[in-house]
Length: 619
Image (cartoon, rainbow, N blue to C red; front, side):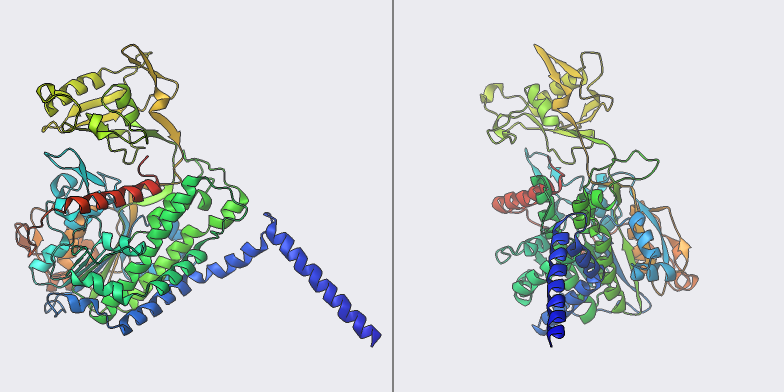
């Protein structure tokens, strides 16, 4: 009895000692056993989160929501002999992440589509800005044709810029073309989609998804969805506590955001908060997409998942801190605790998107083709600089800052929006209203532009370097297009009247974590698609002509892209030969849209600026 008691006591003391050692080791960064356990759990967590979203969609279904019941035209199914098309966009999806994961079996649904379909690179040669590229993807037109030239757009005759929005797009989107030909469509979260356009089906704008992600009020804006009643119906059907719980599970699965043993700058905390909102947006998009696909799939579905892009911008330095051998990539200094917390977020997010894709494919009609695509890829950042052009414009007397450091529009004649400040190509906008001077001597826009262009082009450093490679006015004298001389170094000084101005005041080095690259992923599969075809010369302008052909619709002659006939099987091309039409413009059922009320426009602009600033797109 005494021996048994002694053994029990020894076991008890040993258990306490082991537990103490585990606690100590878990709190000590090199061991971090707790993180090891969490990591093992997270490895299978992406599929579990996807299943949770699917189960949540059953709850939404039980509430009585049927999104396609709100479609203006209740019947779908295409036309006899025509196929449906599902366009699924993953912003920033990159082969350099996908292929290693595919080869290791971690993206089975992407792999399955590649095996039974055609795949390769898709490229945009004229922009790296998402709203610009996606608008080209869904219209088949270049920026100068469709009018969405940046995140914010200067409208002729106005002193301030407006967010990229549907009312500023000059041409029809694919869903308008399909609607005009009697096809039923469902559109979920495209760029520049607010206010919602009339379609033959349903249209859910990006702004609606953003507001839902923040649990903001949607009741008073009737232009968040089409039809307008759909917005309130969705919010009533989606229980907010369940949505928040699902978001927490997803967030915890992706990384260790407890911030233990981490000392992160405030900008990183802002980046993480921004990423979380985009993640919630993707959960919401998938919830709605599954309702559409499962209940009554339309002839054309467009659904857009945004989260890969911010995940890559924010967390790439933890995923690949060393860069790539032989390249000019930045080598980030990342400690073990940070890498342990955030190093698996990018591949896990791809796994989550793969699981979402699998759920869509599993429930697709057998006559549907699916096109999976992106606007650009991402990779680790290269050495770059911020061009803080407004600092130079202030030194030249064209701009003033207020007490908070923002541009004081009332005392400014020339300013830079500050968007994507790492780009040396800049646009300086002219302001003529609100300048504090007498009306009699108030200069015209043409006067300001001509004088400023002459002065800017003559700027040189002390040792004779041109500050700008070029500067020229637009034809309407509303802006100056300029490009900074990349040969400038921070030690240079610019000659100004009465002194010099250090280049380091407006050109500063920075290390962006993940950076855009031109090539992205493109996969097409379905009953009308050839298998095993590798195609590496896809242009973003080829998407609309190819999509129209796959839907049995004529291709407009004013589309600059081509039909990717090499990915289509002979039987389909024989059954549905390429047809032509002069143009789709003016043929869609879209009504003339009125502009937003000033307070709505101001709020929408603020929302977009805050979102871009949190990700580092605005400095």
